[in-house]
Amino acid sequence: MARVVVYSMAHRGDVFPFVPVASELSRRGHDVRFVVPREFHSIMGSEPFRTVHSGTDFGPSTLDAHGAYLARWGMRLGGAMLLRLYFGTFTIPHLAELFMAVDAEIASADLVVAHPAASLVAAMSCERRGVPWIVGDLFPMLVPTNRVPPAGMPNLGPGMNRRMWSLARSRAAGRAGGAPAFVDFRARLGLGSDDWNLLDARLSPFGNLALSSPLYSPAQPDWPTNYRLTGFTSWAGADDGAIPDEIMTFLDGGDPPVIVTLGSSAASARPELFEVIGNALRAVGRRGLHLTSNQAIADRTRNALADESQGVWPFSPLAPLLPRAEAIVHSGAHGTNALAMQAGLPSLIIPCLFDQLWHGRRQVELGTGILLRKPSRAEEAIKQLIRDSAIRARAAAFGRELRGEDGTTAAVDAIAAFLASG
Image 1: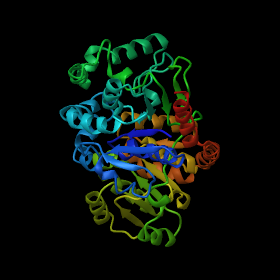
Image 2: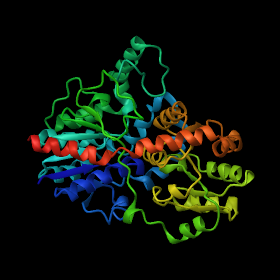
Image 3: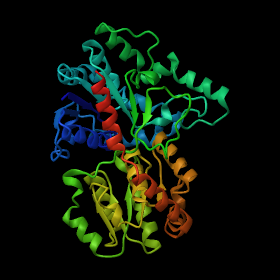
Image 4: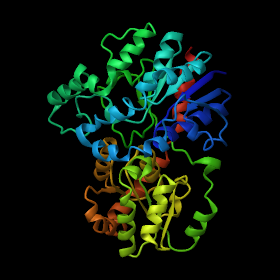
């Protein structure tokens, strides 16, 4: 059996899709080390793999302090300014610590499975040590194709799409995202960087598994031949998705609620949305179960709503709650979006980041959800969410289709085949 390093950090939605993959690899007998910020270690305590600190605390709690930046730049310029936060603040100043932590694990590894952004660091160790790496991609909308423009940009045809992707690969775009710092660090390690750019470097020459459904993320004919859609790899949560007693009491105390969860990005960027949605739910006579990402926002929301029909908690695994819900309001983040669709629930999506906007538009295309850009129209959108029978029927039908897939097994089978190939 092989020793496999799984590597991710940042938002919960950047980490949780890798948990089922790491656990299944462990159950198949592989020695799996999940390199991840300490904040996640206790959450994953019941899983069969070992957790290792990533060298920095680049996780939800750290990101919560930068909500204002996410609110300002999350959807502007196709999300390009987010690189200044994710790389310029949380990665580049700490490259040495991040590299040393993951390199210590890769030193004895046979394979690395990494988040696309984290792979920029892991790849440097892999290249030096001759260890292959596979990227578990959560952002198929960032894979260049002449058919579709970069996320957030207008589709002006194949020619213009090609030019926009070329611009995303340019040195100017690279400088804005901090590429020179990665190139310099690579040089200090004795690694080449000819034509190195952030867009292409986030993928692996060995293999790329998009942890998304082919029913949801349309494959493009000009994608790399080593890029494969496996299906969603959704995690039930700690202890196989046990529901906390106080939330269970709330669920048992009335009609199925509308779940309101904005993830760790939108929650800290726009915490007032919990109050807006709570008031809209109250106006139409619906209970709400609000998951606010952290205790400070939970306290603020609970005090503002002051209504027993609106239950508020900082965080709880989402998967076990969805079968008890009527609908869901969320930001469109990858993990929450996947869970909501697999459960067959209609979604009201209020995006904060560029990829969340993409998911919101995609749900509208599929007829499974509603995209809300103006919070002032929240009550109207809530009414549509709970009363539009066509959206509810399509969401339920699409959920049945998605539940026929097994993304975790497909991803682990692909990893196992790669290991077996030598």
